[in-house]
Image 1: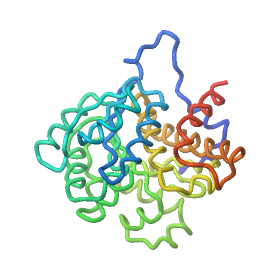
Image 2: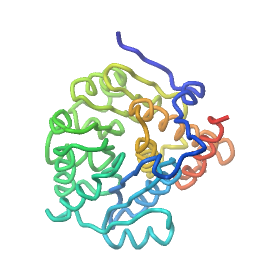
Image 3: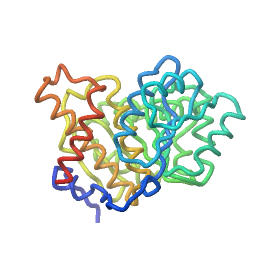
Length: 289
């Protein structure tokens, strides 16, 4: 029987991982991020800061030298590996560099190129940690391949599209998606063996069997960069999670609740994506009580 839950504060608190007092950084996994580009440096910054706030023991950033240099000055806590996935040798280096990761993010602000598609394909053809495909990774699949690579993936895949990205991937009109969000999201997740996070008002998180409909969030999050924060936060939590679906639902709730808290102070007009990572940390604190 299909099960559907509303993700409210009580449900989110039940999904929050426990952190034992005798833990070490090795207890909480490695989150690897392939995000940003020369054009979208901000996407890399936002996803990386969110990952650092999400609790992973190690956060690895893999990307072009100019990105690594820019980020290193602002976020010394992360570990940086310079590579260029636009060439075959860079993609092989990327797969090897993520072999110890607990979760991998690909796509936030990367630009939807054929090289990015080939990177996604190479990752999905190998066994390993769950992969979060966000933004341009989804667009690259739509432009240069098909959703079949998700169905045939050798690792867990979590997709985080907004309705237009989901439309490009599936061929459904955005209006049809918005009218049938739960059904279409659930059907896609079931037929492709993935977890789908269909963003928007009442974000749907589903594996085709169990679904969560989020109760937090508002138009305060309707700004470029908010999705980068969610992707980084989710990847960090997944790095030490044993429940990918519940973790995705938790990340979506925390992200939305952070926007709500900030909007109460700054208005839905005045919240920026850069405000979100620190507020997400405060939401974790509230849920832990």
